[in-house]
Amino acid sequence: MSVVLLAALVAVSAAVLPGASPPALADGAPSYGLDFTISLERDSDLARVEARVRQSRSYLKEVLWRRGTVEGIEGDGEIRDDDDVVRWLVPAEGGQIRFDVTIRHRRSDKGFDAWIGEDWAIFRGDDIVPSARTLTSGGATSRTRLKIVTPDGWSSITAYPKGDDGWYLVDRPERRFDRPVGWMAAGRLGVRRASIDGVEVAVAGPVGLGLRRMDTLAFLNWNLPALTNVFDAFPRHLLVLSAGEPMWRGGLSGPSSLFLHQARPLISENGTSTLMHELMHLAQGYRAADGADWIVEGLAEFYSVEFMRRSGTLPANQAERAFADQRDWGKDIDDLRSDRSTGAVTARAATLFAQLDAEVRRATAGEASLDDVARKLSAAGAPVDLEGLRAATESVTGAPSGVLADGKVPGY
Image 1 (cartoon, rainbow, N blue to C red):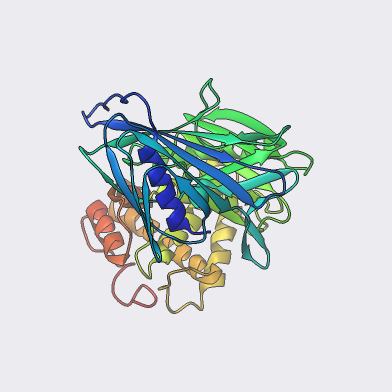
Image 2: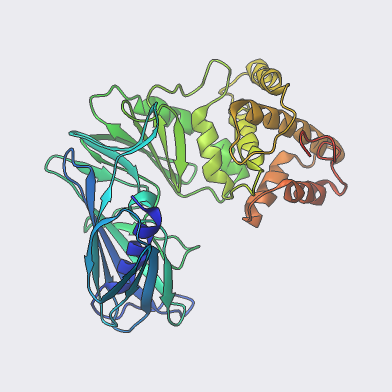
C-alpha cells in the first residue's frame, strides 16, 4: 500500500464531492464538503475507499500523489498517470474517487500493526487515507465526515465523535484538509466509556479475548488528570484499542488514539508503563528532529513514571526504584543521537531528564520544574532538538543549563 498515493486519493476525494456550496468558516475562508467511506469485508485484505466532495465552485482544483500500490483507482474528472506521479484534475462541480487499499501490515516477525480477519479489524486511518498535496482557491478548507461500512454483526469505532446520522465528524482545526487519521477498529467490539478530566475516553477491543477494559479505564481515571494538568492541549477525545494475536506485542500511539497489545501490563514489574508512555506521545504534540529521538522518547519514559508517582499509583519508593533501574539500564550509553531510540538510550535519556528536573527546581527555588520546559516544547510545535531543549530550559531558569552543557549530554 502506498501511503502517499492514498493520501492523494484522500485529497482528491475531498475536492470532488458534488452538492450545494458549503458555508464559509468563521475566518471567512470558503469550504467544501468531504465524505470518506471505508468499506470492509470479513477476512478480506482490501478496504474499498470512496472519497466524495461537495463543491459548487472549483475550490479544490487538483491533487498530486505517487502511484504507489493502491489498486483499482477510478473516479470523476481527468487523471494523468506519469510513472510514479498521478495528477488528478478535479471537476469544478465536484465528484468522487474510489480505490482499494491493503489493510494487513506486518510490523516485524512479532506481529502486525494493522489486521483484518474473520471477527475484527484494527488499523490506522493514516494508512487508509494518507496525506496529500492539493491545490485550492481562496484558502478553501474541507468539512469532513467518515463512515465505516462493516459486515453484518460488526460495529466500528474511532476517536471522532459520531453524529446521529452514523457519520463520524472529523475536525482537525490545525489542518485545512481534514483527513481521518488515528487508530480505528471494527468487528464484534466491547466498549467502555468515561469522561475523565474533560477528556471523553473510550476503551475498546474485540469481544471474547479476555480484554481488561475496566482495568484500563480505572488506570486512566487515576493517571490522566496528572498528565492533562501539565499538558492542557491533550486531545479532548481519546480512544484506547487493545487486542491479542496476531497484533504486534507493544504500544503504538496515533492522533487522539493508541493501540496496546493485551499482553502488555498496565504497569511493568520495573515500575514503567507502556500505556503512560504512549499517552505522553499524544500529549507532547511534536516530533524529533534528525538524531534527537532520545528527547521525545526520554521525556515520555520519564513522565510515564513521574505521573504515576504524582497520582499515587506508584508509591514514592517504587518510583525511585524505577528511576534507579533506568539509570542502571542506560549507564553504558555514550551517544544518545539516533533517529530511533533504543530501550537503553531511552533509559539514559529519562535519567538525564530526571537530572534536568532537579536542576530546574533548584534554579527556581521550586517555582518551576521540567513541566514548564516540556510545556514550552509542546507550545512551540516544531521538531525538537538539543538546541531547542536548551533554549526552552534557559527561558524557564534564566540561565544556561549545566545538565545540557556541551560534553554533559552523551554524544554531544
